[in-house]
Length: 336
Image (cartoon, rainbow, N blue to C red; front, side):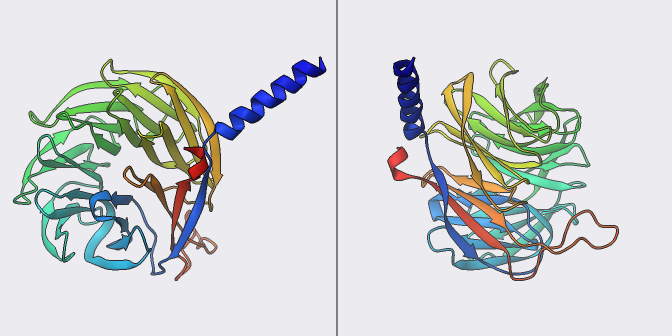
């Protein structure tokens, strides 16, 4: 019995040693007033776009230096980058529009009408089009990145949250109010398929594994749902924390991530396209639920801050001025 126990202990220790170990390696104090939303890395240029209510903060990934700001954003949420045209796109939730800006000067060039609750936004290279995801309008606004003009609004049949481009002419989004994934044909600009995320409810964040045709939907019900987007069905679910608002997948490590409001970054390893297990939960500050992954450096970026007590009648606590911080999480070199 003792030999068996020793063997199992050594085996468990060996597996633990082989497991990845992620940790916070940098804390860049950026300060500034206001809350935040999407964290969007721009890997070719080693920078991160951070939505801060009335502006975008542009930060150097390597030093944490503030490179500049895209000012005059009326309710900043998401950012999309179209390197081909030299333009960036920021959704304006209050303005029901999209601000188009120069990627070098950060100057806003124009504003394009979108729809109510313009929230997430992404660039699809296959069609060379930009897609917003308009929550309350239940639609996606399609924009020509060359001219900045609106092409059309595509009705989605539900409230979209995060979305991704598959790079093959298809765009996917979570519909959080009806717990579905929707597929958009980026060329015909029509909804071509949809499927339920059950038992995962209220899907919000999304990431993609294009090699194995898998989508990762982080759900507010405390699960991450993995879809086979060729078959249009859920193939796995993994428990995560409550209040998820960020997701990522690193194809070089096979690790998926979910950032949640309870102060955890859940690391999930892909054993096979249909099998997954949790390998780590990285402790992060509470409410650090927005994340972005740079697949070139394998770094994960999270926004955090300190908070004061909520005002009477308010649900969200206010961000204390000067405390906004960008966290950088890396995998231990020994874990590769």
